[in-house]
Length: 269
Image (cartoon, rainbow, N blue to C red; front, side, top):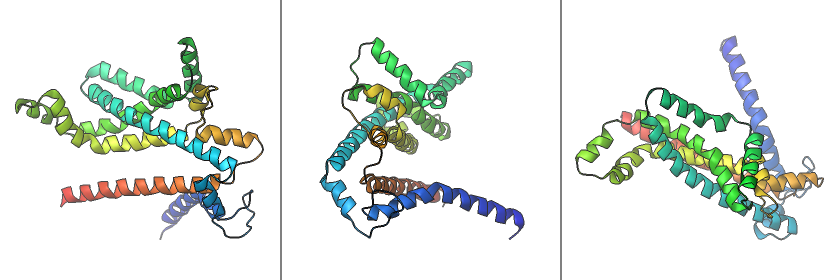
């Protein structure tokens, strides 16, 4: 092994260690009841039991925040996937400067800082006299999730045979049938990727949620953790919850990537 390969592999290993060491650290200490990380008081599953049973007031509040987070994330991701797919089809069929301009406008929400998006939507809802709560949070999440779906679907449209839709129409299919039975199956990998990315972005968001949730009592994981940290510490049940979320997301990504790899392999054989 020459010097360049050794340096590149060492650099990659270092980056991976920095990224994943904190997660492994939290996972290890989720099996002890110590309130502070780094203090091992013996192996136990009590934190997991408390998390799933809601035995303590803090764990019950945490479960409520998790439920709210999942409700917002699922609804926002599903609607974003629908709107983003339709938007991607529309953008793909544009030409020239109009297409370039719309793609640029689509990229702005992704490049815009979350704090600006959150404040802007907050002022918009205040101006429209909309009561803040589930509806405003979901609308806000749809706003910043949809461009990510568009970005995932557009490459699949570029790979698709451009004549397949017109061929379906020539064979007697209605535009709706051609969309559902011809285009959607071709675009499904990009739609799934877009949904997963939108779900992750919604799950992770704090700034936009904080400004659009208002004082309705709605708490997501991010706002719950923020409020918990301001009190001087974090709920111990957060350690097993973070471990479970990481493992679930890892399993989903592995499943999607293995499935995509098998499909690609079958096409090449």
